[in-house]
Length: 300
Image (cartoon, rainbow, N blue to C red; front, side, top):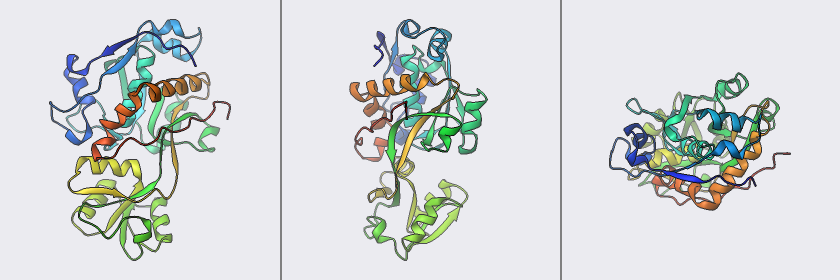
C-alpha cells in the first residue's frame, strides 16, 4: 500500500457554513445542530505521487470534480437549500479527496444520473463517479471501476407498523412498488407480488406511507436512506435477494487511479473513517455499519 501522507484534521464546525450543511446526517436535514464528521486531509500530498499521474495533478491543483446523485437520501442528496450534496457517496468522495490534500470545500460536485455516468468519465467532465455505481463487466469495457466500497442488494421498505412483511418470502399477493421499468419490479413479480411502477422513488415511498401499497423495493442502501429520513414511520426488512457491488468510476485513460482508490479505501476501512461515514448517513436509519467489503484487484 502507498504510504499515507501526514494528515491534518478538517473540522466542519470551524469551516464555512456550507461545509456544516454538506456533512449533516441525512436524518437531520436542515438542523444546524446535527452531527458532523471531521475529515482527514493529507498535508504535502503531491509529494506522495509519481510525476505524470492523475493523482499528483489533482493534488498539485488542489481541486477535484466528483459526480454523485442528488436524488437519493442517505446516499447522495442535494435539497433546494443545500450548498453541497450529502450522503454516504459524498462522504466517500471526501475521504478520497482528503488523501490528495483536498479539503471538502475545494471539491466540485456535479450531479450525475445513471445515464451519464460513463459519458462524464469518458469526456472528462468529472474525475470520479461515486453514484450507486454497480461494478459490471459491461461498464468496465468503457470506464474504470475500483472497489467495491459497499455491497448491497434488493430489499423491501415497509411501514414501521407492518408486522406481516418481514422478507421477500412474505410478499406473495402483496402490492410492491418501485420505479417504472426497473428490474426490481421484475424480481418481485417472480416472487408472486403485484408490481406497481411509479416515475420516481419518492412517489413510491408516499404510497407506502399512506398504505396504498404494501412495500417498496430497490437496492437496500436506497431504502435505508428513506428509512433514515423517517425512522419512526419506515423500516427496511429482510435479507438482500440480489447483490450489487458499488464501485468508484474513473477514466480508463487513467488506470493508475485504481490502486490509489483501493489503497485509500483500505485505509478508511482500517482507521474507522469508512464506518464513521456510514454512521452519519445511512446509519441514521438505525442500522449498524455492515461488514467491510472485499476490494477487487486492479488487475481483474
